[in-house]
Structure formats: structure tokens, C-alpha cells
Image 1 (cartoon, rainbow, N blue to C red):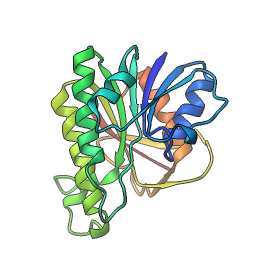
Image 2: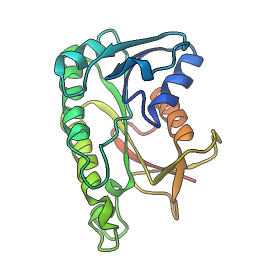
Image 3: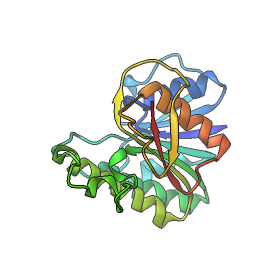
Image 4: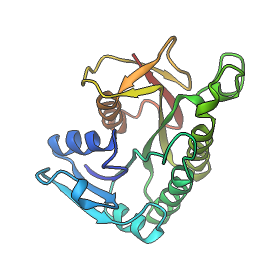
Amino acid sequence: MRLAVFGGTGRVGRYLIQYATAAGDTVRALVRDPSMLPATAPGLEWTAGDVLDSNAVQATLEGSEVVLSALGGAGLDNPGTILSHGMRNIVAEMRKLDLRRVLAVAGSGILDSGQGGIRADAPEFPAIYQNITREHRGTWEALREGRLDWTLVCCPDLIEGNLTDSYRTSANLLPQDGRSISVEDVAAFMLGEMRQRQFVGQRVGLAY
């Protein structure tokens, strides 16, 4: 398949590129610094630019079949708007090009709570994650409003670990007592889900 990848030099994104190209997929990544990309990945192309630039987003999407976003914020306290505004740009350009399938990464704060609402609305939700969760909510809203075939992979603590292929999934909920997931397993799950289409139009909690 031909994939468009956003956030390809980040923690999850670099594994998306590694695993996809190893499987024979062609990847075009939008990056601000192409030197951060692997020099030897077969089937890897790149567009230099920023996800807030609609022209750069369109150039990245052209000719693609599936879109994968592993965009990250600038930090917990002040994450900026790259996640929400970036996804709105991606969705808008996808609609122009008649592209349908998109998968993205977010935090587990926007998953449903057992008490109603989302987890971030619960009193016990850590305050330190509220700002980044607002950006993740913006990503979710952009996907829903775009009426595309979207899947939003919602993760608790992202750790550098191993590719285990052994984790739990739950539609719109965090698996019970789920606390972490490796960036390697998140990338592998996204590439599997883009073909299996088990969670289209849903958030999916992913955890050990």
C-alpha cells in the first residue's frame, strides 16, 4: 500500500516507517527535518514542511491510500495546537483528494469513563495531562467532523520497550488496569488495523 505518514520522526512514527517499509509498503512522510529520517529505508519518500501548511499536507497525501498520524505535542504544559489544527488540515486535504482511511494516535484521557463522559472529566484525572488532552480531544473532533473512515488509537503511558504483539484492545474504553503500551506495539497495531478495519469510526484503547 501507499501510505502518508505525519509525525514520522517521533516516537511512534519512526516505527510506523520502519515496519511499513519492511513489509513492502511505500511511505511518504511530511517532516520538518529530513535528516531525521532513516537513510536506507526502502520505499521511503519525504516532503519537507509543516503539518500546519496545507500545501505541504496536500503534497504528502497525493497518491496515498491510507493516512497515518503520529503527531506529538510540544509538551504537557504547553502542547500548542499542532495536534488539533494539524489534524484539521489533514482532514480537509483528504476530503479534497477523496481519501477515506486515516488512523491517528492520542492519549487515553479521551476514552470513555465508567462514570460517564470521558476519563479526563473525572475528578481523579491528573491535572498535568489536561492541556494535552484538550489537544487530543481536538484531534478526535476533527476526525468525527470530517466523516472519514477513521480510527483513533488512545494510549496510556507510552514506553520504549519491545515489539510484543501481546496487548489488549477495547473499543472506546481503556482496557481494565491498563497503564502502559510500547511505542513499537502502537505502531504495529496501527499498521494491522489499517488493513483489518476492526475499529473504524471508533476510539480504541490499547494497553498491556
